[in-house]
Length: 94
Image (cartoon, rainbow, N blue to C red; front, side):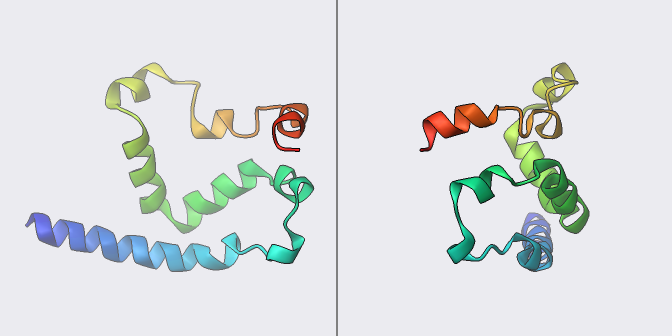
């Protein structure tokens, strides 16, 4: 039964990965600090959650314990994404 469950999850992850592929492509010739800093994390999170809901849930589950989920009602990936100021990135990645 466990093997079937793992195989099923792997199949879903493969399918969702294919679904995400087009939206996650980025031409290497356009890669720069400015383009990376201009990523709209809210849109990316929303996109991943809609195109790959099982993958999102699996990664969220692996990233925190049940106690953390209960305790951190305001600190979620959605709430903390993009919170570091641009100046911080500039000083650390220039």
